[in-house]
Length: 245
Length: 224
Image 1 (cartoon, rainbow over the protein chains, first blue to last red):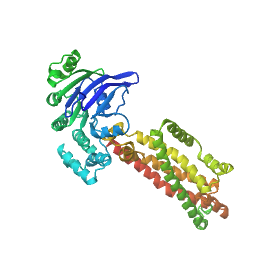
Image 2: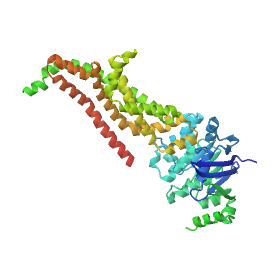
Image 3: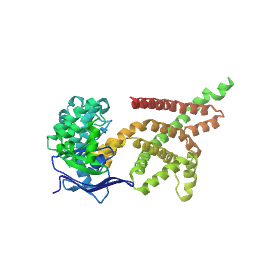
Image 4: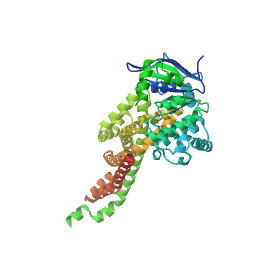
């Protein structure tokens, strides 16, 4: 059986360097998956292939809700259903916080200005920054900016949310507020694929943890299995290095 | 006293002022038309040069390089004196506007290209991830940010275009400089030339100060 997000034989080359070595992965609707692994293991590349921010070798295939992620009309449909939160926030600096959230619903879905504004205010309330709606992103703290970015992604009412190291660029004291928003999201039935170094988050929230190294999936299982009883030596080495510093 | 009578002869200046003002109007018309056309041309060339299929990108690169290399005076004379031999006869205004627009378009395209390329890649990725198409990404996300970056260099380029309108006098267009030289011949006194120079200064000096202001404000905005 193939998943809501189904990945088959995914290969990615940067010139002659192979970043992904034939990944097969199925993610069920509503599942929360955390992808962990050392830097350069291909975990960010993997999730960036899901909405095709990265091209991949045509021998492989990714489907989201049955739609193949290939350039053209289908890709636009997939991208409208798949939200993404970036390490560096990537908010639009020339737009207010509210306008950041409103832009995609208005342009892609054709939502009216009034409805989009209502939607934006509701989502900003949900991520706890309704009072900042009229400010510009650069006047917000990193944690607040990342919460705006989450609200912006939610505005498209995505079925799948991709998180690419969402807390890695944050000062330590701001990591918690972003993780709290993500924890709350995990209970709402949205499919979440999270590349992270936050082992505590993975342990608490993930339905499944995937450990990647060298462009391959090394080990996958429940948080308890992978984080507490890893069977692969590479997983043990990585966890040892991460948890004991 | 002699010097004043020669270069700032009030009677001569007063007599030639209507001619100079006629010339000024034409100079400003030519400048404004060429600036606007050059901006439109430059934006189109920049976008095609960045995002079109490869043969078009190469064509745009060629256009930009050729028209940044060719001296404006040479181009103007080719347009006005050489094109009639192949049946293309343009008025002096049209010749001057064509030459100014082609050259300004090439510089403007480079300015827009640099402005667009200065926008962080993450802005394109965030737009794509939200499902915006390429046109929406440009119109709603990239260009509003790029325009802020390119306003100082574009204003600078516009000053150059206005200055270069003076070259139109060599194709017999009665612009400010041409009117001044004719008034000088008529009155046998160089005061109209000085008058024209002062009029150019009066228009362009504030613009030069404006560019400095924009550049200061922009660099402050960056570091803040």
